[in-house]
Image (cartoon, rainbow, N blue to C red):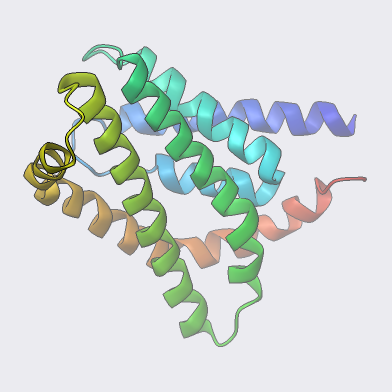
Length: 184
C-alpha cells in the first residue's frame, strides 16, 4: 500500500504540475510549475521529486499547443526540473526547520532565485544548441544576453512566489511528508 500511495501521489503531482503550466501559459514567465515540483521533491523525496520534475516538464513541453520542444531543449528542461525536484528534497526540510521566520522566508526566496536562475541558464543553453548550433562561447553569451529581460521576469516571479508561499506550504505538507517517508 505504501508504494502505491507514493506512486499515485507522484502521478497526481505530475498531472497537477502540467495543468498549472497550461493554466498560466498565456502569461509570459508566470508559472506555478517550479513551486509544485519543489513541493513534490519535499513530500516524496529526491527520487520521486526528480521523476516528477522530469515527467512534468516532458509532458508539458511535448504536448504544448505552440509545438513540442526540440530534443536538446527538452533535455535541458528535464534536467532543470529534475534539479528543482532534487532541490525540494534537499532544501525543503532545512527551510521548514529554520527559525526565526524571517530567515525561513529569506531562505525560501533565495532558493527560488537559485533554482530559477539554474533552470533558465540550462534552458537558454538548450535553446542555443537547438537553434544556433554554433559552439562559440561569445555567441552563447550574446544569445543568453538577448533574453535577460525575459529571464529576469521569470526569476523575479519565482523568487517572490517562493518568498511568500513556500514556507507556509511546506509547513502544511510536513505531515504528509512524514506519513509518506521512506520505510514506513
